[in-house]
Length: 482
Ligand code: GLU
View (cartoon, rainbow, N blue to C red):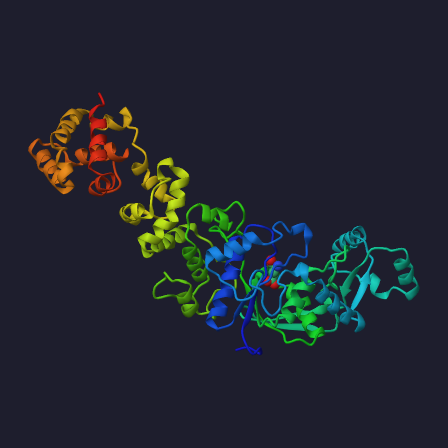
């Protein structure tokens, strides 16, 4: 399936801080593709642009990948045969490659200033011409060139396209895509401060690191033209490309900061599970699955990379993500869930500071079916950490029989010490006898125990609180004068 002897793919983020869902999907597809083909998954940090380098050690990205379970084979902390994996530490490699291009006449200095280029661009647009670099500096006479260098005029290096040529590239998603080079500008290899551009460094590293498949966002499709020309200039093996469609929101617009879940951090904070995020992002691109809930190894085995949607848009739908998340909370063991919920509870309730995992597991078991996202445990278990405050307003629907109901509770509450089921059964027959609506009785017991008329099973709540606390809460209700 490849001209390379083994599959080597890379995720190459710029350390701009938080990962957004588009990045996560790119990382995930690279990871799954590597696993499926017993290949190597590489992380390379593209930090040559100081203006966009907000996380110099890429700590955030590496932590996020770890959290998502996307373990890599070569990269920043682990190292590997092509280290270093931070582009800012690879300058000498780029310098060497630039020299090769210069010596073969494929790179030239450009002294045009930003203002001059902008003026030219506007003129071309006015004349309805495609805005392209007009190659002013390609034909500078040796004297003018000497003079500009002597004056220490700032310059960049540009790659010289062969404008007669066409570039045809194979994209796993889009098929064969062809471009006429005469429509493209000679792109920059360096910046005015001497640093190397994304276009150059990214491609050189793909060559040097022997990348077999380039899986990245569709926004890079046009960059591929210049990069393929570079591969050809170095007579390097051209990898197979796979440009993933841009993610859209439910309305079909490009996913943006305004959409909840755009940033991975939002989802993490809201209590979504990494397993669910991986699962969801892997299956939304298309394909039909016998069952949709899959962990990474299952996804790598089941995903049909040929049927993954490659054109149009992949739409992000938080409701579907929630559904998958819930399926995952059901699938995870209660001890595992308890481990993940404990810090959330400790952040919310002082009384949870000394809660042990052993104490938490049975609590998780009673709320598990209602747990959509992890943070739901905070409201679902509030009853355990805080005695409810009951308002008159909450009780007013029961005013007519309040005294009678509370009286019955009091009459039988000693039974709670012996057996909660006994207490509930006795209360049930007492209600029948006194023609009290069972629903009202149970709602009031729940209000007494949890502050809410509906929700968890009374039996479970009493078991969690223990007899003494349950009785005390019923007493608290009985003390209210309606
Ligand atoms: N640094 C680029 C980005 O973050 C990587 C593009 C690529 O994968 O080639 O978009």
